[in-house]
Amino acid sequence: MGPGDVLADRFRITELPKGGGMATVWPAEDLVTGQPVVVKILGRDLWSGLSLPAADAHRLRSELFKRFERERQMLQSLGGSGIPRLLHHEFRCGEPCLVMERVIGKDLREFLNTNRPSLVASAAITVQILETLQRVHAAGVIHRDLKPANVVLANDGSVYLIDFGIALPTDPEATRHTLHGPTPGSIGYKAPELIRGVKNPQPAADVYGVGCMLFQFLTGRQVFEDLPDRSIEDQHRNDPPPRLDPVRHSVPADVAELIWTMLAKDPRDRPAPAAALDVLRRHLPKPGDPAPSPRLDPDPTLPFRRVEPRGPAPAGPPAPVRRRPPVRRRRIPSRRAFADLLDAAERALEMHDLDGVPEQVSAELADAQESWGPRDELVVRGRLVRADLARIKGDWPGAGSQYRSVERDLRGTTDVALVPLLLEARLGAAECLVPDEGNAKGAYGIWEAVIKQLNGLPVASPKLIGRCREFADELRDWGYQVDGLLEDLP
Image (tube, rainbow, N blue to C red; front, side, top):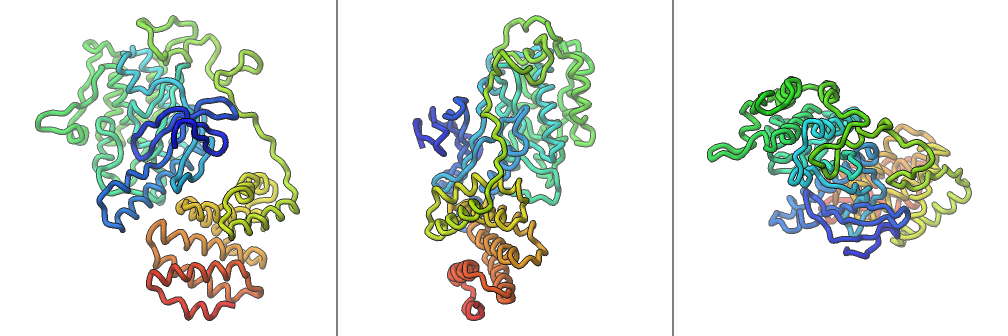
C-alpha cells in the first residue's frame, strides 16, 4: 500500500504511514465525503520478524488478530463524541484493517512540546477526557493506555481519545487476549495494578492515567522520572506521588487534593470520573471569557468560551465544521430478490469468487435483518455468507465470532429449515479454531458432533455434507481418524 492507493473504492491513501503500537496508520481521504480519515492495518512485522517457534508465532498472531477485532467492535459501539467514528473495516492482503475518522489537530504529546497549559486550559482538557471516559466506562470498557500520545486535541479545541488497541471489557468473564511479555500500557502513566499485572483491572486504572497527565499539565514534568537505582515503574508501584503544594505550584487546594487522590496506589481510594469532574468544572472558563495568554494552538478552552453552549450546532448556517455522510434511510428488501442474491453468493463462494455478489450480501444484510429479524431463514443464510466470506479471506477471528453469533441465536431451534443452518454455523466455528487458535482437538470434537447430528436430520443437506468432507481432509492432516465417521455420512 502507498500514497494514491484506494481502499474499498472509497478511501485514498494520501501520505506515508506512521508506525506505532501493534498497527501501521495511513492518513487517507474519504472520496465520498471529502473528509480526512486514517487507515489502521495490523502490522505483519509484529510476528514475522520475531525468532519464535512456529506454535508461539501462530499463538501471537492469533492473539493480535483477536485484539484488533475487539478494537473494531469497541470503536463500532463507542465512536462519536470524544472518540473517532469507525467508517469501514475489511481484510486487505490477509491483514485486518480499520478506517476511522481522522481528527485534525495535535496529540497532547506534541501539544505539550510547544505549550504549557494554564490551570484553566488543563481543566478544559481534563474535563473533556473524563466526560468521554464516563461514556466508555458505562459501556463496560477500560482504555488501559491513557497517555498524551493517545489524546488528540482537535483544531476546534475538542478532545478525542484514540487507540483502543489494548482496551479491555470490564466483564471479568470476557476473554483477555493477553500476550506474553511486559504488562500492557505506557511507562509513566500506567496504574500500579496494571504494572503488577492484575487480571481484571477496573475503571480506576484509567483515572490514574488521567491523574498522571493532569499532574504533567500543571507542573511540566511527569509524576516520576528515572533514578539511578529506581525505575519509573517501580516508583509508580511502590512510592507515594509528589504532593503538589498549592502555594509553590500555584494550584488551587481542591485541584492539588484531587490529583493526590487520583494517584492513590489503591484503586479503591481514587475518585470516580464524576467526582473529579465536580472539582475541575469549577475552574473551567465561562462563555465570553478572553482567550488564554500566551495563545494556545490548538486552544482547548474554545469549546467552553463560546457564547453559545456546547452541544450540537443549531440547524441551518453556518455549515458544520466536519461534514457527515447523509443518513441512509432503511430500505425494505424484497424477499425474492434477496433469496436470489443469496443463491448467487453461495455459488460464488464455492468458486472462491469473493468480489461482487458476496460483498453485496454483506452490504444488504443490515436492512434484511432489521426488517425480518436475526433468526429469519434468509437472514441466517446471509449471516453465514458474510461469515464464509470472512473465513475465506483469512479473517479467522472475525469469521469465528460471526459463526458463534449465529449459533447462539439458533441454539435450541427445532425449525427443520434452521437446524441445518445451525449445524453449518457450528462447523464454520470449528473450521476457524484450527488456524485461529491451533485447537485441532476442539475442532475435531465439534466436527464429530455435527456429523452425528447431521445423520439424524430427516433431509440431508448436500452443502453441509460437502463442508464436512472438506474439513475432514484438514483434520486428517492433523492426525485424526476421520474415515469411519465419513462412511456414516448420507
